[in-house]
Image 1 (cartoon, rainbow, N blue to C red):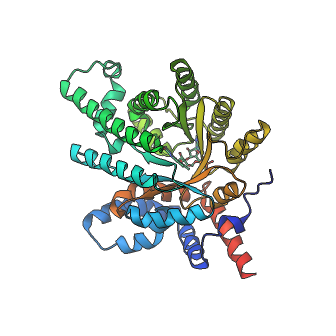
Image 2: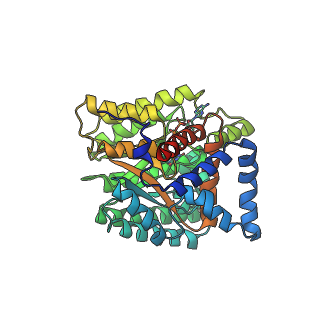
Image 3: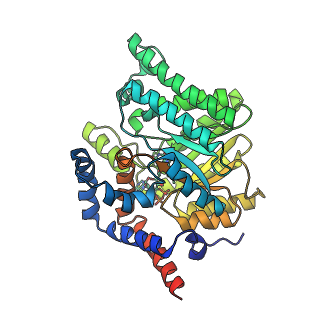
Length: 394
Ligand SMILES: Cc1cc2nc3c(=O)[nH]c(=O)nc-3n(C[C@H](O)[C@H](O)[C@H](O)COP(=O)(O)OP(=O)(O)OC[C@H]3O[C@@H](n4cnc5c(N)ncnc54)[C@H](O)[C@@H]3O)c2cc1C
């Protein structure tokens, strides 16, 4: 294998000079932590006031990280990626909407997205947040009370509410299974993750018998998750189903630490970055060691982890397009990894969110924060963009 993540010719072949310059401007802006801090606090508020900021957001951060406001708009981006051998994880970016009507509407939207994905050759997955189908407070209650966790509910209303959530997920997975599209269930905050994990396992047990339709997400920035992965694997083997797993480091670190500190419990987050990295790679190895039972998505922008997974595959003599091993990066980030992996024949996809600007704001704010941190991604992105712009100038 002769892979280089420094090859910017491959990485940015799909972007025009103008688009590259736009990306450069955005990443340069995000280099200023104070700007991102003010921006991420003010933007959700300004959006609510109705001030005309849609245009600016649309042309900058939205364009970089989101496929479009509608499925139709997003289809164009998906087609461009497909031309370079890159697949797509379609993400209907609904976040923070509450109410039974919203959850039912989201269920219909997910089914529409699955039906569209099934008509395309390069969209093998869609992604889902359980908070798009369920009340956050309900998930929190289910997470906290051991009595409720074991299925004994004090209130019939809560039992009925949870059953409706399970039915929504069942309907989505049933259509996905029929159309052979994978459903990736996102991991969220640790204080709601328990019911999300249980629901994911329940769906896997039903739908992952012959092929892998349902995937849970494991956040390795949590110090208990490598053990949880091993437990999930044991259960899958015992119960005779395939384990679908998306491996991530985790997106809510500051929030997790702050809450643990405020409420006075031990933080679920690893003691340092090196521990997260160690567990991430150990999880990759565990999945690849059990590749007959596991289908894994290595979802990371970390070059070492991507290389580690690719080299492990070669060492074990696994084909680059092995149907149980996928790589994925978020749209707008780490094109150097995505497009170079694609060139080497690996299954690799972009996680491509879409939705009205106001609905994807929380997602955009997370991307801005992630890219602004001093040790973060921005420096690397800028170096690569500058290198490519210089190369094109000749
Ligand atoms: C396709 C895809 C799907 C995703 N889905 C989800 C999801 O469902 N749920 C979710 O939470 N996130 C999700 N993410 C985001 C992901 O969790 C990370 O936030 C993001 O990818 C950055 O981590 P990294 O592995 O790419 O890179 P890196 O830059 O190597 O790692 C940065 C990450 O390391 C961890 N970290 C940083 N500093 C420390 C420290 N001091 N101590 C301990 N850990 C530290 C944090 O998780 C941080 O985000 C997804 C990412 C991708 C690419």
